[in-house]
Length: 108
Image (cartoon, rainbow, N blue to C red; front, side):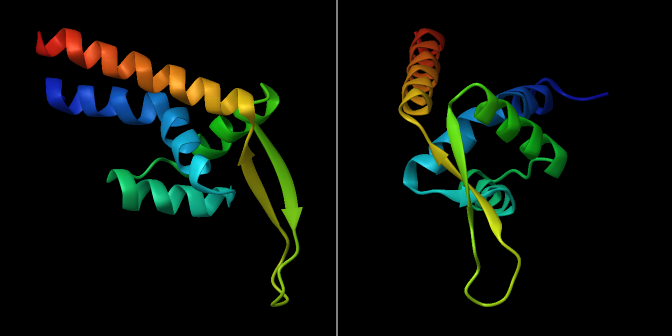
């Protein structure tokens, strides 16, 4: 059986993965595997690869990110880079604002 803290950590990370992805894309465009690695470095959890791709696909479909293929100068395959759109920036700010307000209410 999982503890309440384990469930909280799961809900606030895996189930709102889009917030972490948009936050990192605010820094610069990245490809999917790079995003997954940066999430681990910056936020100390590792999302499932499939989850990352599903979230990125949905963010692209909904207009929060765009994609661009970039050729590698070293002979490696091209990579699909994800870039934050203005709508994605607004969504990130709204999401962060909601989390901040929730924390304020919880802290009393």
